[in-house]
Structures are given as structure tokens and as C-alpha cells.
Length: 190
Image 1: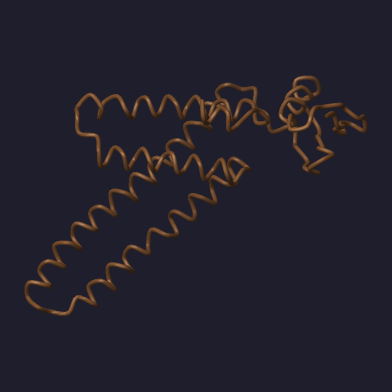
Image 2: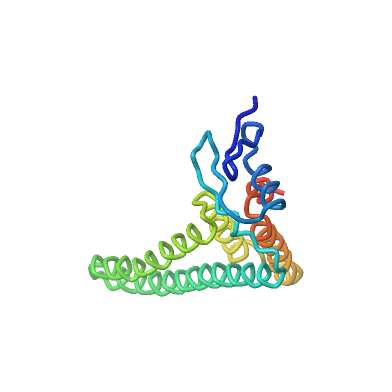
């Protein structure tokens, strides 16, 4: 099933569901302008590709640092607040006082992290120009941080798991920034 994609006023044949292939082919040929997909009506800016390896590495390092730092901070603060809440709750219940005020204060303190998470999601949505990809990457970072906080106790795991994850995410981000019209979800799952 072949449909046409308009590029520079000319119709370029392509197979359905292969807009990435056409975008990358046009990008290597011309490298400037816009590509409009006939079926979906989406416009792709061909100037977003970065062939500079240093720029790609810098962008990947920035996104990795920002997401992992914010997720780690949020998780660490949440754990500390839960431990403090548990100790205060135990003391309140043992002294037979009402714990409604304590629970309300804890809920309001925990609500401070909602803007951090919403802001991080908005940042990733705009940075990747893809909401599903941004949410998936944030979920992956959260999952690994939770796994490390809950399950990892061996010294070898503590030393090597962050390095392996960083290498995987760095390779993924370099691919995403180097080939913005590539196969994003296949690369994420690879």
C-alpha cells in the first residue's frame, strides 16, 4: 500500500507507516525545509537534525542529568518524609491523640512534589516533541530508581547498575537526537 508524501512540492512515494524512513531519506538528501505527511497531515521540520556529535552528546547529558536528578531528589525526599511521618504517627497513636492534623499536614507536604513531576513531564514532552516517549522515559527512570531504592543491596549491583542504565539511556538519547525521525520506540525497546 503506497501513498505519497509531499516534499518541496513533489510527491514522494512511500509505504504506509514508514514516515520515518522517508523523513530520514529526505533529510540526508536536502536537509532543510519541511516535510508534510499526506495521511496524517503532520509537518516535520527537517532542520532539527543535529549532525554535530558534541551537540548531541551535550543534549543527551543534559536530559539524563535533569531527569535522573529530579527523580532521585523526589524519591529521597518522599522516603525521608514517610519515615518522619511514620515515627510521628507511632508517637501520636501511642499517646492516644487525634492523628487527623498529622495526616493532613503530611498530605500537604507531599503535594509539594506534584509541581515538580508535572514540570518534569512538561519539559520532557516539549524536549522530545512526543508525549508517549517522554512519559515512557520518565517511567523508565522512575522504575530504575525505585528498583535501586528497594531491591538493590549488593555492592556489585550498586556499582554497576547505574553505569549500565546511564550507558543505555545515553545511547538511546544520542540515537533520538542524532536521528529525530528514526524508529524511536524500537530504539527504546532495544
